Image (cartoon, rainbow, N blue to C red; front, side, top):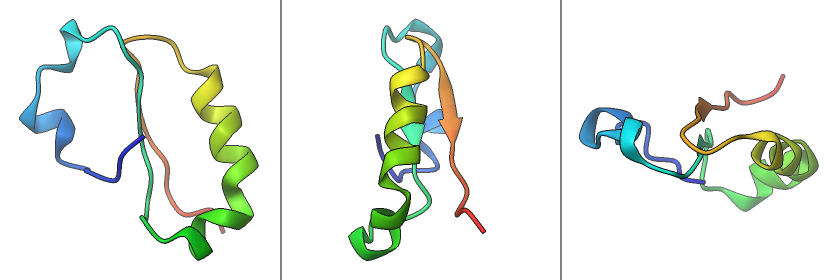
Amino acid sequence: MTTDKNLRYQQDLSTRGIAILVLWTTSWPDLRPHAAGVAVTGLAMRPGEYRELSKPT
């Protein structure tokens, strides 16, 4: 997990054996209400997968 939205442009992610989940913020108070959903999303990802999460409405 990261908040670096430029990571996909800075690194060749196609050769990585890890999943990358980009979060919308680094602020724990903003993330906390959504922590379970973030965890479910992260656990469902497969190696090589890249996802960016937007702030839930």
